[in-house]
Length: 180
Image (cartoon, rainbow, N blue to C red):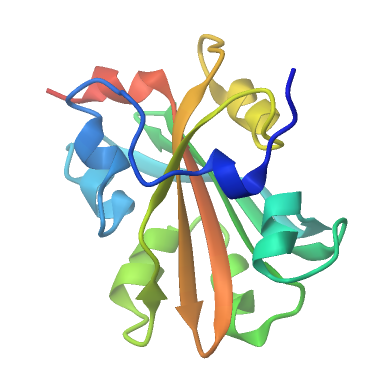
């Protein structure tokens, strides 16, 4: 399989998804708020929170050498205990701007980013279909009820006080089961 090139992997257009899922994938505001609005029980399940190797694309975004360690948080967003989104947030290791945001336990990142941080800037969303070339794919695959060769995903870059936070969210097929 071809290696992933981070500079060309993410694009401006969302991948093809069921019509009901598209507004969630392209939501410019809080995905958490949109998931809460479904009326189903929403939870955040923390899979990892702490220091970890950054993906190459994350290291590049932070202008760090490959293999750098960062502050990472991986969570699963669930509706009625069913995983619907798998997310990974990353920042420079020890970055004081993002440390408290990335060590928040089961509190949703979206509620903080869109409700508590007025000085926050968000770059335009970027989209991809995560497949086996992407290092986040195995974590996403572990949460899916049924394996798929690729999962629609989006990437956000948030900036505050000159420091960046990267957020990758992969959408599982089960999300469509909760939508009209």
